[in-house]
Structures are given as C-alpha cells and as structure tokens.
Length: 501
Picture 1 (tube, rainbow, N blue to C red):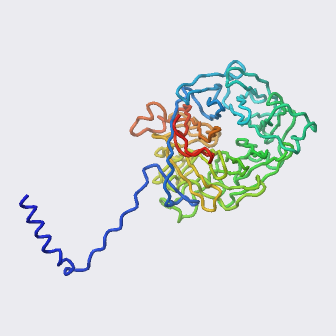
Picture 2 (picture 1 turned 120 degrees about the vertical axis):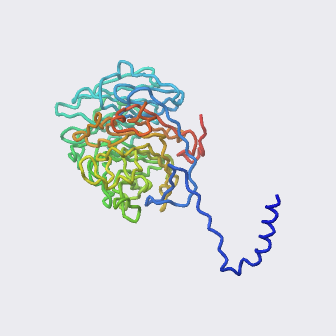
C-alpha cells in the first residue's frame, strides 16, 4: 500500500510538467471490432462494408443415407423430403428423424434422381432414371404415404440424362391456352427436362406429371456442351428458366408454358471457367429473376493472393421477367473465399435471396503447383491436397438495390471436402478414391414461411470430420445432410424474424 501511495504522489507532481518533455501524444484511435471468424458482410465487389451482420443460425441434420446430388422440398405441413440415389427420405420433425418412404413405385437403382415439391399443390415428385432411354416419374399427394408413377420414354436416341422437374403457373398463351393443345386438368404446369446427345429436351404435362403430351428439343443452344443443363425455375407470372452449361452465363426462357423458348446472355465481363457446373436462377414473389454462377475472382484491387485472384460467385438481375439482364456482373461472395462449387439460390420477396455453395479460404494455395503441376488459380477441379471446402450460406435482404449488401456465414464446422472436387465426370482425380464423390450439385429451397433449407453431400464425414489434419483420401464420403435456418430473417418480409421450432 505504501509503494502505491508514493507512486501516486510522484505522478501527481510530474503530471503538470508532461507537456514540457515534447508534444502531447494524441489518443489512440480505437480499432474497428473484427467480425467473428467465418462471418462476412460485403458489397458488390466482395469487399467488406460497415454493416451489422445478420443474426443467422443454422441446424444440421444427418439424413442417415448417402446423398450425392441431393434435391429437397418442404410441404406446407412441414415435412421435408430429401431425394438422392434410389431413396426418398422424409422428416416431419424438423430433421430429428428420417425414414425412407420411397415405396415400390419410386425405389429404383439410379445415380441421377431428382425431387421436387410443388409449392402450390404440395404434390411431391421423385424422378428416377431407368437405363439411358426411360425415366420413371412418381408423385405423392399425401406427404409420401402413398405414391403413383408412370414411365416417360425419351425415345431410342440416347442419352436420357440430367433429368429435372419443376412446376409453375399456367399462362394465358401457348400451352396455357385451354383446349388449344390439351385441356389442363391439373392446377399447375409440370415441366420435365433432360439432355440427350442431340441437346436439351423439355416437355409440359397437363395432368400433373402423369403424362407429357407437349414439348421436344429446345431451340437455340440445345447442342452446347452436349446439352447439359441445370434446374428448372418457374416464376409467379409463369416465366420458365433453364440454364445450359456454357462459358458465357445464359438462360433459356419460355413465357408460354414451354411452347417456345428464347435465350438471353449476361456475365460476359467474367464468364465461367472450364470445367464448369450449371448456374441457377431464382425468382421472387414479383417475378424478378436472379441468376448466379461461378466466375473468376475479378480485378486485382479487389483482393489478390500470391498474384492470383481466385474465383467468386456472381449474379445478374432481371426486373422484366427475363427479357433483359444486367451485363455488369455483381460479386456476391467475399474475396476471402477463393474457390467454389455448386452455387444454388432461392428467393422470397423482392430483394430477399439466399445462396449456398461450397467454398475454400485457402488463399495461400493460389499460385502453388496443383496436381497437374500448374499454378492453381482457384478452380476446384484442380485444387491440390491442402485445399479444404466448407459449406457457405449468403443472404441479402436488398439484392435489388443499386448497392446491395451480402451477409455470408461459413456454416459447416468442419470441411465438406478435402482436396479437389471433380467438375468433369470424364476427368476426375483418384487419390484414395475418386474425388467425384459429391457428383454435380446441391440444393436450396424455402418453405411457405420463408425459412431456408439446404441439401448437400458431405465428403468429410465420420472420422474425417474429427481429424486434426484430414487428407483427400479421408474425404471420399457422400453423406446426405440437411441444413435449415433455425433463427434469422425470413425471406418473406411480412413474416419478420424466424425463431427456432
């Protein structure tokens, strides 16, 4: 106590003289508090902006089955359907438990399934390939308790591949005109697309998917890249979008329920690298459209690592139902994430969107030799063994603004994949097993409350997830995982903030 008193007295004596020993030292400027690890708030260039991050919380659920190339949907009752391989998995308790409800009408051995829940009628669809010439389309109107099904014959010309199905409103033109081609007997139009060696083929069903009387090969870019295409999207005004796998981001559009199609391009300023996977379109409640894809990292001033800019997720918007699109692409992902795979998107009210993708922050590996000996530029197909990929989720509540803000969360606690991700089925890596374990896509949809649900395949599952330094040979799983928003803003403005179930 005595030492303290003496020290205090000395400070009182020298305090008035402090200015005599030199210039007063200005007070230190307080540093801006850093965001927590894995949280990013960015503008249209991927750079940080001074905005409070959204309070986004997510829950993960193990489906209990392998689930590469998963698709999912949620009925109005709250039952979640996760479709992958030959299984239709259902959870009606928010992912606490899962059961296989395929039934004999839907259980087929296939590596190319697709699932869809009609948001208007609650009809659940499960589509399976049977060989290369025929598909089997089954559906349920009672949350998977019972199923009906019919085959769809794609003809004798192979290949029946990349099967996709979606539903949407009838329009007042083309196939939507009652009686012109066939009297519609189901509340929504059902669209079914696949590729063959000749290109992209799309058909329209008038009876809820039981039969497909109208359609055929699309015009325009049907033969691009073998006709490979992504998911089908239908807007509230009936506009239908299909995305081909091409170098310049492109959408193929129909405004008459599939009778005729036209194409629009965008993103020529960034393009998309080869090998590439499909881009995706989402539409909001007023039929504005949002198109997302993977592209190169952008200008050096936006973040360069070892002289390389990596990759980014980009978006173009249309506010006139796909007639015109922005030609200057917006980067919606943070510059810290330098490599990507499988972007998926959905939208609620205007400007309210959510995107998921696999991404890597291993910027130190940019420019390092990849498995082919070349300098790695961020392309996931060529990533080396030191690169790890996580599940990311990006939100925006003002995506139609001139300067929208994007809130990104690194959602998975451990990697989804260690090492490269095969983006070209004819050129995969074999390090302790093929890196094509995740196949071609993941999925994201919202329910009628605007809550986000995601389906993905986890390549680093089980022991791999708990290892201190997992290697590519440890990351060859394909476990089906469902993720949903537990708390945070709904994509429907009127709902406000969502709470846990």
